[in-house]
Image (cartoon, rainbow, N blue to C red; front, side, top):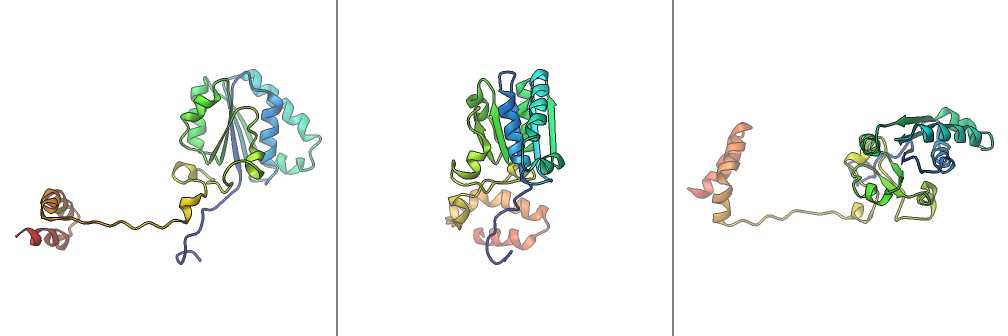
Length: 203
């Protein structure tokens, strides 16, 4: 149907990025990583933290958790990374560069951190906002941009189903105001007829 009607973006493989500080519970963080990794061997789970101790503890918790999960084999095939940043600011910057489908923020000032996020499909704020809630029961929808598309795309929403048309009405004064930059741009592109269509109206 591409080209005949609008279609939504390519979804998947799933991704979760967690930004966590030293006070985050390692078992919570490990659980959120595992929850997204169990979807698909191509899934991504990334922890950015400023705490080496938390990084070690999450790795231990994830190892323990895998011993009891039904889809442990899939989780082991998926990509899981733990990155220790110099600060939470750097961790957030790294998360923004990744532009994940899901971003979970578990820091002392999680709401403030979340307020500055621009590149994520959906942001989950605080230790109890686990991503599976978004999968099933919380939030408006869960069709989200993946593969870095959160840099320029939004989640599926009401506006996705609206079609807009621009309407332009100008008088002679408006045309005179826009004449010079329009004609200059037209000539720069080598499109003389474009320039003429403007100028002929002002002769």
